[in-house]
Length: 236
Image 1: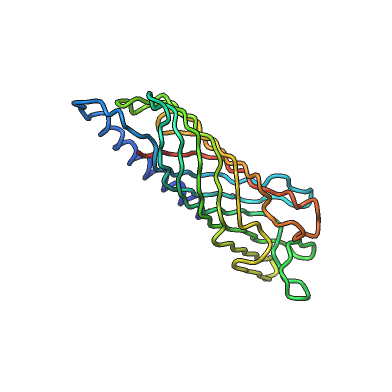
Image 2: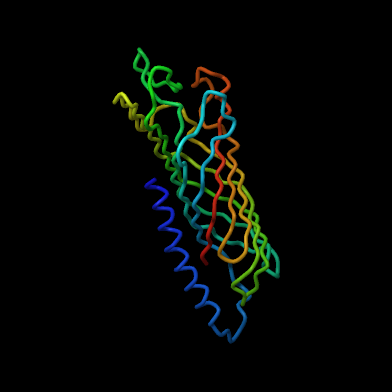
């Protein structure tokens, strides 16, 4: 539950910051309208992470969440500047709680199995990624408005810089590994953010499987991927 507490604290702090920033922007008096303005160049989001295409013996448990933040350069592409392209760089931290355990086999190699002889107390995968978002952006903003509708959609490419697994059974057995082989380091997902003013609903749908081909003994598990649902906040 620690990550949930962190998410709630970050959202609260960000809400206060955004509220103050928007008020200050609203109180500005423009001698001349800025016809070269850009929108929404910093983002932060909190998500609930879901593993999709799960076979019958694999299930999630507890809370699986993520925190994502970064900078996206806004490139308006029409005179009204309500259409734009966005290209940026970001960081992503994700946690997945489930019953697919990374454990050593008799040869000392790491395998991913659902244990039948151990009762799982905790089992968690965590990933840290560097990401490159690319977006097509539509909004109803103007040079002097600070509340507007937006629809931003595109793709987000990423690379897993750190992968950690942590398992503990009720019997006391433990397995912990940092950067074991098996997962796809390169990630790609389709994204969309839709909302009004501060609040925006965000969806990320992975189009690359979580594991490499041939890693899992059960072929039904090869197509596991991630879906992330949550809220995204933007700052100029």
